[in-house]
Amino acid sequence: QKEVEQNSGPLSVPEGAIASLNCTYSDRGSQSFFWYRQYSGKSPELIMSIYSNGDKEDGRFTAQLNKASQYVSLLIRDSQPSDSATYLCAVRGGEKLTFGTGTRLTIIP
Amino acid sequence: GAGVSQSPSNKVTEKGKDVELRCDPISGHTALYWYRQRLGQGLEFLIYFQGNSAPDKSGLPSDRFSAERTGESVSTLTIQRTQQEDSAVYLCASNPWVDTQYFGPGTRLTVL
Image 1 (cartoon, chains in turn cyan, blue):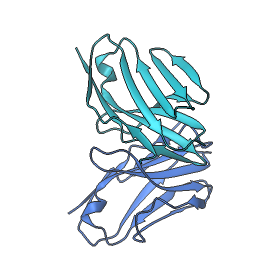
Image 2: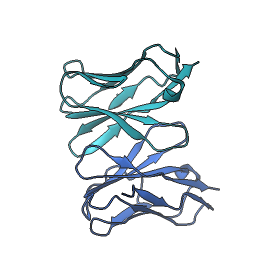
Image 3: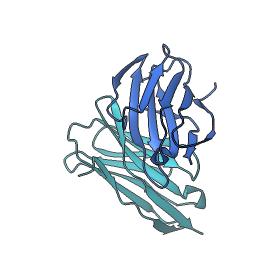
Image 4: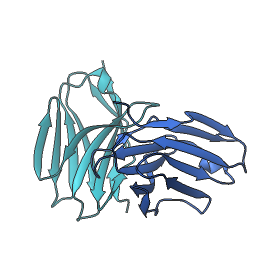
């Protein structure tokens, strides 16, 4: 079992709709959870971090964490074409971040 | 201030040659990470530095890979006797603590 799993996609969402990205992790001792966005040919950039169960909102982005289910998600409201990218889930256990393989999201105008 | 920088941005080499990839972290960042990203894949952890010590080298794929860091400054990733499967983008990231990593632009390595 991979340590951090994401649906590889591609995920296509109409402009203005909600995009939902999911991630599961295997290490119950994981402490911190992150979502990175990576445009094609570019480096990952951090868009959300979450540390405790529940929801965390930042603008159009909401991260959700459920440690009992070992599940973290990212919701993007009012999706824009500029949101088209690969979204990487990352989980910290100890001093290392482990990344999922990413979900490619395409927003259809 | 300046972000994480990496050099070269692109490197094309012949199979069997050695290459050195450089990372300049953000000033004051104590932690530095190297990752490898093959085309269409996620990030593969290689090595982590805290200061100039490397508590976790578990991701280095073989003994052809090595890395060092000078103090809390520059790090160099060296790949000896390069193979075609080493072709990838090599990303460096730094952060003041473990969380919130800031990535450099990467070095695209192509082994012919």
